[in-house]
Amino acid sequence: MFPHEIWVIWLLEALSINMFRANLHSYCSFVREIKGECSFVRISEGSVVAGSKSGELVCWDMDSGDEKWRRSFEGPCSDSDYRKGVLFFTESDKVHSIQISSGEILWSLELEGSSDFVCCFEEGVFVSTSVYNFEIQDYSEGAIWKIGFSGELCRSWATIGRAWSLSAYGNEVVFGLSRPKCGAGTLQGGSELGHISLAGDSPVTVGKGDGRGPVVLGHSDGVISEISEVGASSIIAGYSPICSIDYDNGWVAGLEEGKVVSGESFESWSIDLGSPVELVSFGPSLDNERAVWAFTWKEESLLHIIDLTGKIELSVSHDFRISSIFNDGESICLGDSTGNIYLLEGEVIRRRHGRSEEEFGQEEKRVSLRKKIRELRGGKFAVEK
Image 1 (cartoon, rainbow, N blue to C red):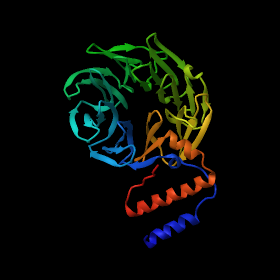
Image 2 (image 1 turned 45 degrees about the vertical axis):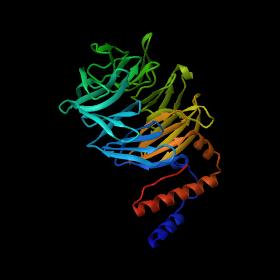
Image 3 (image 1 turned 180 degrees about the vertical axis):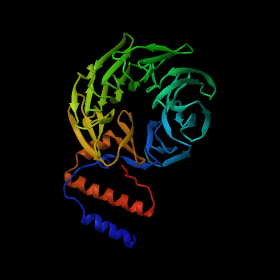
Image 4 (image 1 turned 120 degrees about the vertical axis):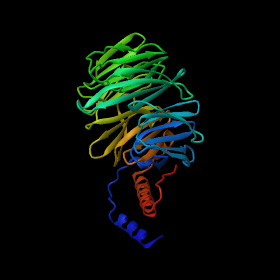
């Protein structure tokens, strides 16, 4: 160990704060890095894949944490979906297909406008694009593109305004629209675009569908719309924009005003977290059941793990904004504004939550020192299981 590293350790110990407060690193199975702010993460085929606004795409083995491959693009990366061992992702004005196991780029296709969302169906890959009009300071037009799995462009449809979500509803594409059209667009097979007017008719901000159940859309005025086989329905969840929404046999949403709200499937509870809720997702809990993960931001990030009755199980802090999230049952992956990627697993979370404050404090200090030494040596920070 070099003298300056010993000095850093001494300084950190001298300045250590006795008051214990667990942070996100305390519960991670591993932490890895990507260049630039993380724009998407996902778990597929035993791998963690992340894309950044700087254009990097990286894949790690989920069990070992070893890096499998790393690719660079112009950027920014925007969204991703997965089908049969292949990752499809949007980046700049393009959509790419890449083999997850090897990192081989199978094909790339340039589109018109900024490539936003991507969603896979049995009949092909659908991508939404948009064009920003600087004169009106808004998205004036967009398009939905259908692409074959071999990279051939099949067809495109123009949209009025931008799609702010792109989801599967059975064999139908559903997307939430911005002004001036608002409402939801629909597309089935090679047919023409359809449109559904929704209550309030305010711009859609977020949306989610899993291809099996309804599609839920959040609006800028706090309304949530649900599109199902019985038609479209809406409820008032609050009075500020819906910032994030997730669906898994029922929906949960986070609002700018600081509330997390659930749908009827979870008895329609509401909890005020005191700061804008930027991301929500279902994920592992402390009792082997599902829970709601909600991230707020006010000078720092706070993660609140909330049980399905609306009670907070655990709150931990994080210094930077969480910018992306993906859950896969008992595993959940996060990316932040600095490019750190975090894998958390239910079993590990529950085991570490049982530690005493003294054990947690000692672990926090070890993690902090390892990180500082790696930074001094130009290495990468990793927390192992």
